[in-house]
Image (cartoon, rainbow, N blue to C red):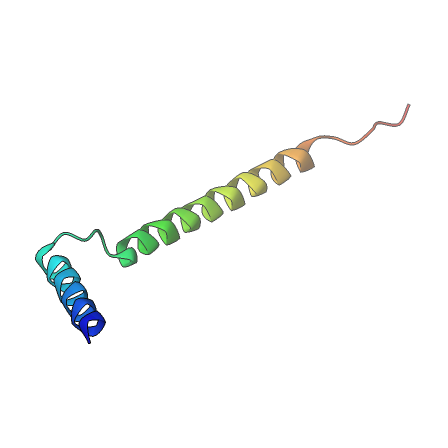
Length: 66
């Protein structure tokens, strides 16, 4: 019975400490939104660079006939 009392007191004390500490960090949702935005921007930049590089390579003349 003493173990159950100890366990109850320990859990109650820990829960009270957690309730007292109001600042428990940032929500993961804003972080996920920021990461999604950065990934979208990186994909857009990659697509733009790939299209510009492809256009530049296509503008290079082929081998000329002697």
